Image (cartoon, helix red, strand yellow):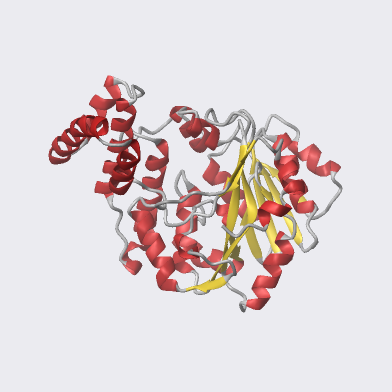
Length: 389
């Protein structure tokens, strides 16, 4: 079996059906789908059985698991030579399987193939774009202006991981972008479970980059990451941080490390796990000072817009080391004045240079209000998939 698609799911059957359909419509049948049903209230097993396809298997967990546990449960059931963590609200585009098989043959059986992607928010998910949108999602700095696949040198992969520990997004952590060989999975497992930390994709994407000896970077946008009203991205876009944490960990246990956004909190946890497992071998260290900077920047920015409470700002100040408390507080007060004196574009450039996390000047293509759901994207994405950047 060439590839196992992992589909962990919980109470999102309508989206799961479409994710499965994007695989069933591939032009190669050398695949299996492994569904790990995380104790859903919906009849996921009944749906899978109704497909009457022995390549699509489903197992139900005996109790609700945290996201990371369920991802590992899905991986444990897989048998393919390669694995893709697809996600139950995501999809692969037409020709994905045959394209991956061709790349494996062309580049001498690489351990990791890292691809470009699209991002699709369903209508009603993003308050800034209620009609939904489809956009490019290729963050990888190492792609540059490439339009054809290439071997990514190990030193460039290591550099990308180092920037990740500095809380800069040198490449996209979504696991949907990484086709991983069975051999690479076993390498990573020498340091424990393949998926670790509450943000398992942040950890596993970096761990795979560190352990792989042969990496292919494919700039083509071959997968679609879905954001639905039942996904973590929905909570993040709608500033419902507490619900997002509960969604990932399966409980309300565990305090935040520092006021700010849960994205950075989860990012820190993943990078601390990476440092513990691989730090000695690769000289890795988490930049905890910059973690505090980006969290403080998030709180002070929202305070500037009247979105952060006095209690949150006070909690932030109490959590910072004394010197940083003084410096960041002074910067925040000065920022209020500077923001009134300089053009908005210059203000944005300055703040991004200091506390930004995304690639500079990244402006992906974007189509708003044109697609209903993932299958609509699958069926009509031919022109979009041809874009290289």
